[in-house]
Image (cartoon, rainbow, N blue to C red; front, side, top):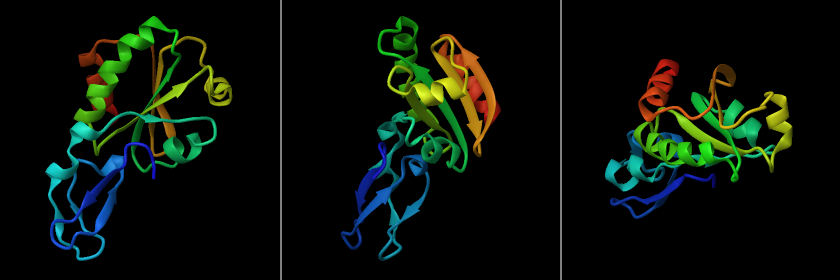
Length: 152
């Protein structure tokens, strides 16, 4: 199970269903009886940024069938600490439409080097596995929202 996925019990038949994080906020059906699953059981408030690493980057970001925003950050970075709660809010707001991921540059030097990260926070937007935009530094929430919407 990936980080951010939600387990929802079907109210009709009682079967446990795994709802991927990127599908929260959309219509889902039970895998067993095909009854609709009430969206309030897996609302966007449960959506959070996904932790990515050098080893799962290809699967979580490049293999994702839609837009992904990757935050390249470090725990000692003050600006990264300012951006983190904004990304938490935006992950809930754009749940089901955009995956927001976080990659710690200190623990994952391969991907950081591959994408030429020299300053943090660096935010890279991907769409269907291709890099489409880059932002360096802490931006206000409204500006980040606008950038995400432009990728949609």
